[in-house]
Length: 369
Image (cartoon, rainbow, N blue to C red; front, side, top):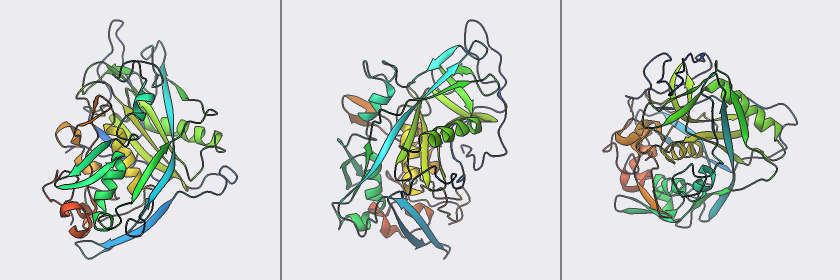
């Protein structure tokens, strides 16, 4: 079973590595590299005046799980049992540039640079706009049920709440990728104590590493500095290229969190075929989890998942739970996600009564249910 980091506040550690002149080293920190995603707890309200009054479009629901306990949740978008139209959430894609000096790799990983995504001359950021995360041109089935031709996470959510959507067929939650000229990429110069350049433990080429707590601090400083644009009704999605975060051990492909009412997500885009976090796999994982648990406090009664994380149960599957989608002349690798019945909700909730988009768990529920 792939390790999941539940809380990282007390787990930060320096990354100690040695560097050969001719090649990047392998991971030399504590523990064998493991492919993980994580979530950071809500950091609490930002200082007064940082954000003007704004609210993420959200709805509340609940169910009685298999143990008889009442589960309540808040999710991004509108209630599928009540809404029969599009809901649009402004999404700002923020590139994160990682810079490593002579002491820890002497390399820059820039998602805005051309020819970094395996799509001709496109950068990672421009390629992302042509991916199933934001381009609504791919069709997503769940067995015999068609979730819809739409953005991937919207299609997943439609089948997650199929009992409502089969009546409210016009239901959609659309992420509107918005370019803001005033926002510059978040550029981080990584110290040798925070990380370095290593050989990709899951594929070819090299990747950069950085301690997650140091990174999250820089990310939140960026949000505070741009609070006139990044407000609580906006979903800021930070995206890096060929980067894995660390928390003592390696390797974290992404996480989501919140500071009070300001939600946010981070994911990496790795261009090595077959690697953990290949193209949009980490991004689909974190965006899906953000939509279903934006404030990281939808608690469930599962021994493998204390909160409603719809990606974690499948990350340990073959190919890290990914499947292939053809769109815009490319093959993408989003990750499959679990439905509410995995957490003990009635099977009448989801498409086919399944516990995952592609029945990846053969109807299995979480430990504890």
